[in-house]
Length: 310
Image (cartoon, rainbow, N blue to C red):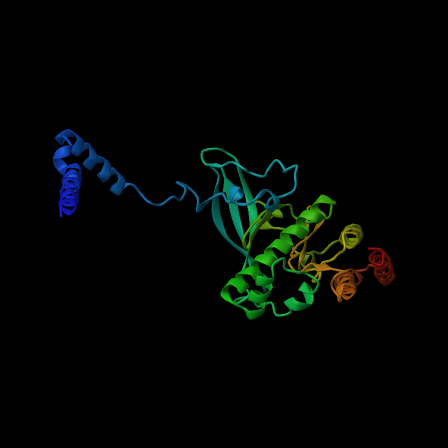
């Protein structure tokens, strides 16, 4: 019983010490006033961590190094921690993604650049129904991802959208490095690919299908198209959906866009068929405007020979 009494006394003493420590009387009136002031300041402080200007902080630093464009970075790429992104509106809607125009700027300076931001929808909301033909030969690294995408779970649908974005970004990087006429890929983050905007100010460059080139311009654009196809084939790629509607002309330069469905011509069983279709789709536009049909046929043979040597 003595032992129980000792424990009880000790417990009561501890309770008293705790109560004494918690009592307001421990602190002076001045300290109490200061604590109340600090509490009020905290409660009144805004809990929004958004930027003071713009629609969001730059996402440049949210991407890992391999998710950023190839070095050396062009001078116009803004990497400042304090930069912000302004949403300027929708530039284009597509089967699997929408392209937005954004301005990345450093507040209180004259440093700003207009960029294209391509944002992929989840596979649940895309209108792109032939994905299997394009992705044949592409392997997911984790079996969990493969199962989730096959079952079309929420996680799987997000993974599918992310893979389209990653595929386009990786293709842009590889092609840009070898000198192919594609936009500079700034960064990829999740399902968003930020890239160079091809146009003047906030006006996009016209699609090839919208141009009316004279004879010298037509010859120049055809030669550029041939070189673009050679470079893609040498890298083991077929665009997969090349046409006069996803190539644009900017200051006399042909630029190839929309690469999410890019095809590995060796891993994909339909790779050579996609390559031949790319040449035909683009070549037909040029022959309808004066390029000799034989030049298209010769290009088909040339690219077939390149593709035969992996």
